[in-house]
Image 1 (cartoon, rainbow, N blue to C red):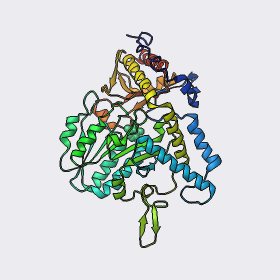
Image 2 (cartoon, helix red, strand yellow):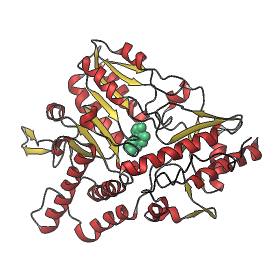
Image 3 (cartoon, rainbow, N blue to C red):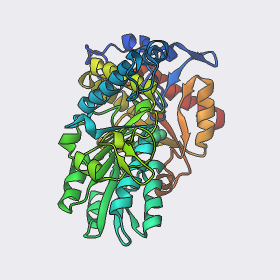
Image 4 (cartoon, helix red, strand yellow):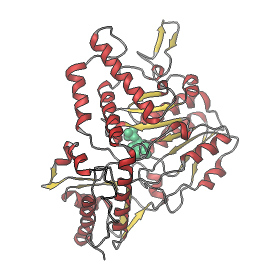
Length: 423
Ligand SMILES: *Cc1c(COP(=O)(O)O)cnc(C)c1O
């Protein structure tokens, strides 16, 4: 049995990224200095939510201290400046995702709300009895349930593209599902459980050959990959701010103008209207048509700071570092006896799910917690995927650019400790 010390680090893992100074980056995240149960925090639950750099925390605070006003309403100084900051964030997101137009960016609470918006607004108008919607076997519940609800309401059918033993999408299985009744495809870009990076561009290309629009759930992709919605040519794309180092309760939906303009509103209320009488209401233009009510303005400004932070850090700089962390952790964990990694796709983001012989993931998580190591245990909001791999739950270690090789060593040592304690 290999110990953490014997597991070979990839040659010059850190030296290979001279531009990426992880120790300096860690200084930007106040919570990483915390101690948990008397131990330094080792945070490996980034797929559930990421930690926030000081700049994000301060941007939210600055809103409440210096800029607090409602948006799109007042002519007074505060409201105008709050509106400006809110709309600037939309432009930042447009550039971040490489959308063609800032009106294609809708602020939402997160990926869940974004998918519900599309299922409800696009679905209500375009899905009819007998139609088919395709998802995959590795979806998060938030990319399953809204489509199920829509299918139930309309008498449509949900089809599920299978997943291979490696955790990769069975692309041919997906291809076989497409037919003249297919009206929509909604798929994960990166799996939150398996880490699999799906061939998003190929999925979109194939669906478009059948004239079928595609939504990509990017909640897990955007923190790890440079997303380019125009290169992907997807019709909708969703991100959750809180997984992108921004506050909770803010996210974005990207949608092509042609779809957004044709879609009915999702919710009714203030800000989404052009004029209201008791006889008839006319709706505002996009994106405001989909932003009823007072939005999460503070969260938006935090989101703006998070995007600035990521742009400064540069994907080209942290993505290779993260990849080396993944390779290092995968090698070390696969060497442990009685431990099996679920999800071994060739293309993966820095997410590792594993199961241990005769030990329940809940116990693994509890014992690791006593060492200050935060991992996620359970079904990860993907129960059908657990069924696919015949496991009730997994333990998941999900990484971000602020994690270190030493933390991976601590995790491996912690897993060995679990075996000694319970094995
Ligand atoms: C987290 C997650 C969601 C849900 O995002 P919320 O921010 O909770 O709305 C959906 N899909 C994937 C792949 C996720 O990881």
